Image 1 (cartoon, rainbow, N blue to C red):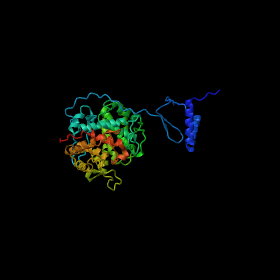
Image 2 (image 1 turned 30 degrees about the vertical axis):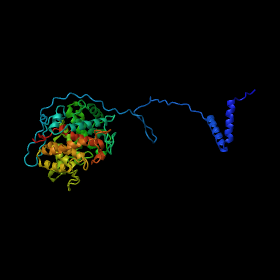
Image 3 (image 1 turned 45 degrees about the vertical axis):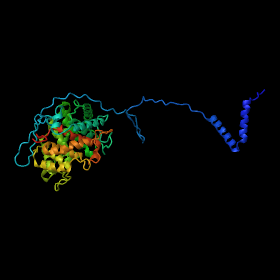
Image 4 (image 1 turned 180 degrees about the vertical axis):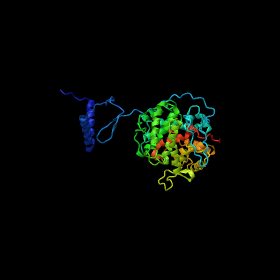
Length: 481
């Protein structure tokens, strides 16, 4: 028997009936359809069960998974790059009282009578004599003696820290990155040589210095690539191969001179042998072995051979004589300026610029020209006036690098003028913040688009190391003799 509705239920039903009777027809229809839609939604909706993704990283590696099909290579995620761990700095050696008076400095060339003063720098230069300024205990007083500052040394320290971060897992450096503003072409041989020259310029070797581990890794990787003929098996653009070989030979001979380590002597000797075999009959070097030379490449081989001589390695006197002959063929204005190369024996040398002129002047100095040689003095004034360290309008770190060395050897008033600007503007233009802090921007530089950020940073670092990187060829300090 059905139960009777309660009074409350009847009252509610009556109210609903009243609302329906009094509501307009469209309101009743709308309410009915809303109720139907809700009911259908409840019937057909089924909430999905929550699922969890389980990652299995047991297969991860650092290798690239290669596929023969065209498409994007799949690269396993790399571990975050770790910054080099701080290394223990050895206690400084006792400060040298007179750092300019190096043990057996290179003597003034002897007068050979009539004609230009081109007597050779003595062959008896002791091992590492011009490199001794890099030693602990010598750098600090040399910085003071030649007008460096805390700012110049701080800039060198920041630059070397940046370079250390750019070293690849294989121990080598790259012109293309991983930094921004890489070079237009890859050349790991040149990039690694340039970086090692910067570290060694501040006294770092595989066993000494703040960055000894970085230098050790670099040389281990580089020497593993050396072939039996003395060249290096690293892919380089064909027209840059000999250029890069000169740079690495330069750095390798420096290493022998700095460390006296017999383990590097055979490598340096083979690199020198390859260099000597590549010298052209005109006395220079260019893009291919025995190709008629140009001043740019020849200048690097000049320094490679001189570094070998300073390290006590065998370098024939005839090779330097042939370089002298080459310099004569590309010189203009009585030897105060130099061209890039001699295109024809019937025409003057082409490409007379401040950069190759300074390179020629430095080569003359290392071949024995006197400090007061008029060719050096005149040429130096010309290139200093043309390239006076303008970062905004005429940035040319390649030219500045060679000018800095020539004027440092000359000393006196020219050095005070040049260094007075260099020690201010070069540190001031260094990147201060961000991932590229410690480097220098290659934009606006004459060769920056080709060499990139590493090239620019290395050459400006060499310049700020000039106070101790090579002791001056002549016994002169900033204020005079």
